[in-house]
Amino acid sequence: MNWILAGAIAGVGAFLADWVMWGKVFTKGMEGYITPMGPDQMKKMMGPMMVKSLVLALVFGVLLALFYRRLGGGLWVTGGGALAGMEFATMLWLSTIAMQTLGNGIWYDKVRRLNNATFWSWLVRMNVAGLLVGILVK
Image (cartoon, rainbow, N blue to C red):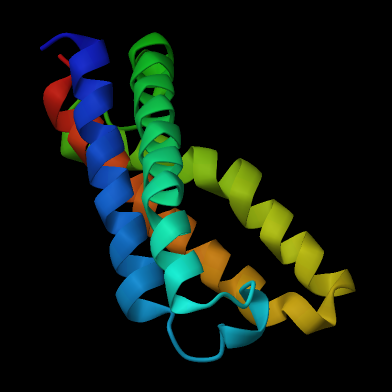
């Protein structure tokens, strides 16, 4: 399959994983981190925010597919596939997002709950996208 199409599909998977994590899993204790809005403002803002989130997820998926295609030969899991995609995504997550959120948690006590949520949501998002890219990019 074309790596761009695979990346777009992975981006949609990442978007859905992100929606589940922030809409269903991380709901308690996050009230202090949102901008207070009335119901009308929320309805007005929700559409553009969802579109922006989807576009960013698509760009993320395409970039992940591009990097996987270029660097996939150096993975421990040889021959591609689901585990290779997840290995690649987890290595990217560990070297960037995991270290950043752990480092921020040292200094910013008041946002530790938000950092922890970001830590785990990015791991899930990355692995969903990595799984899809690993399966679809040959």
